[in-house]
Length: 281
Image (tube, rainbow, N blue to C red; front, side, top):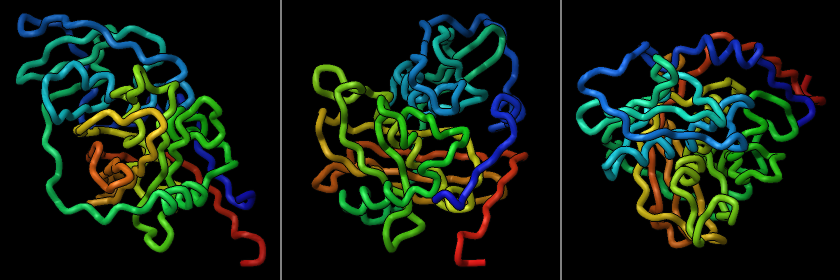
């Protein structure tokens, strides 16, 4: 692993320049919008170093939408430790506002109905985590609360290629008490586990940095503390900088606990250096 490096330009500049999806427009409250509350993402729940993990943010926002399947669109990085206003937005949706800027939107959604690959075993998921290509390498997502390999207070859901199935990413998740209440995983933690594992396998192989644009998810049940789960993903489509992926969280019996579709956007400007490992020159 020491032969591989992963470099990008300054993270705040990257986040500021990324146009995840069309329009991060300014909005003022109007007659068709009313305040419904606030959301605040705890400072320890980061993805990039200075912004919230996309899955935790999306899962927190999704709780304000009355639907079994919710789509959350992240228009810009969600700040940590700051109360953000939530307002209604029509058709059962909401917007999350910082000042006059829309940070995120959420509304009832629809999941892709295509077939899912056969789930990896828990042992294969453990092996996949060990094969994560960026373990020990500092990069903008290495301190993520969900997938950061060195986060002692993190979830340990570090995805890697499944043995013999390189187009699948997988990770094990043993639900910890720090992400649970009354013995059940927090709803946003389930979204977080699926977020990081839904990262495009091809982008991880090529050390291409992507950020989450949209996430559509359905949670069948909240898993129990100590439960051993497998989360795995595959890419459905890839067009230019845009990847469409799907992810499943399954229990020991292979039953679906939660599922999601995600859109990932590769950053326009990134520098990568991938030296040939010793002995292959």
